[in-house]
Image (cartoon, rainbow over all chains, first blue to last red):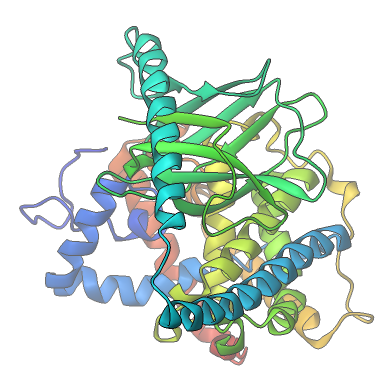
Length: 245
Length: 182
């Protein structure tokens, strides 16, 4: 991050960064600092209000082209599948609540979660050992972590750089028909992983490069196979597990 | 948008139809490749569907929120270095440009607006439009731009600020467009 002189003469050096903030050029830390600063600096706050719409305007200042119809088909398939599943889930939860009101709950879900957590913990430990080994020679701004992969012949590496996190994968076969691979992130002190909106299928050569939203603050990144459209909770064991820290 | 937030897939389809061309156009401008732009478009719309509860009407239009997501996704891909080598729009002929007569009202509006906006960008002094284009459409940071142009970082930041200020003035002059209704 630049440390040049503050053009506005303010002591924290943040005044004058309005344009770069609005254009999304500051890293996560500096961006958060600027946002906090703008809450109390009337100069920056006024400038944000004045220039913000100009940046949004830039999004429309491009030659207009036709979106491919195939994209809509894929998006709507996923959306309709998720909407249907969500509706079924709501009905299922209501039915289950009625049953539970009539009898003592059987802790099968808790047992299943405990089992899944144990499997996950073992995978993460293995991933950590491999990841630590791969990181010993690191030290640059970009960081790579080898992931534990259960699919034969496949390899995966998690990359972290400047607040961006992504997975590169090779040798991975495609998901079963009607399924996709889904990326999950697990945050420190959280028991269950959180769903991301990163769904993917590798190319015909078995390669994939996948964004991991929220990966920079996660402790673990996982990939599972899920029904088309993805899931809100994992429905299968992870095929890739990478420990971030 | 309230219906989308309630999980109504039909309402989402209406939103998709209304904004898909603007979203794809932005993605294509940044990615420079049809396949990458299509992937970005899909990711962005699925993100809108899955995180629709995060949309806050008080902070701007759905269109602006969606285009911010598209922009972030496309630039993330660029910064990963996946597409930068071929950033020039090599496949320019592989996409269909929107043409006025057969388009819907929204698309016609996008065309008129895009013309105005591109005119405003062209009216900027070249050194100012260059830094904004490199930053917003090229995914380059201000330090990278300073290095490319062999110009002090402070100068680059100043040019960006001046460019945005002038664009804002141009916006106010072109305001008959029903910008905030969208």
